[in-house]
Image (cartoon, rainbow, N blue to C red; front, side):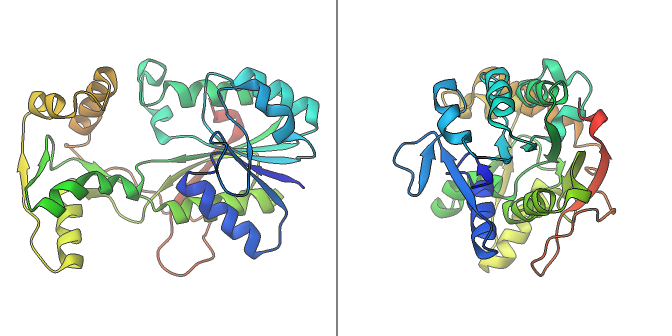
Length: 271
């Protein structure tokens, strides 16, 4: 057993597990949910679960959980782990990232790994393509999708592409030890994404622009206030220009179709 894949119920972890299995590469799936099929108990908020999950492991695919990262690093070093691939976020590159709920926890994990003796590769995606599922209720009900900033740009990248990227850096030593900013192939506004979904579904999908205050009131109860404020601020900043997309294919997914564009930076820039 050589690779631990944490976050066993996450889309990227599931995709990575399938890719590893298809190539006959031994791996261990870790999940905080005890009933996850085929997984060992690995709750990144509970250090008591680390020793069993890390026994015999040499590489780790790690979701960013700040609360237990110091203990995780200590246990990983003790277990003989050599390489950690962190699923972080491109939000850590923004000004004042340490003060934002969108990026602070990712930044803490990056800093802890950077200060450790573990060889670390950082994957920094922007928005996930699956975020569009947040519009599912409106699409099913026939009601307009309510958007505070319909003209805000983002760079949605498919979780399958992120799994391919993780596979690449886990299996090719030449790609490890650096930080990669990962984007989708095109910068799209929310309105453009909805238009594309409408084309695929064969029907028009209406959307309605609402104020930031209206949107925040609507999501109150399941999006914490500080996080909602941070999202609104981010979307407002992205309404002025397209999200940056890289044209440097440092990691190229093996599957067909458009893959993520990536920009490698030195692992010393990971913080």
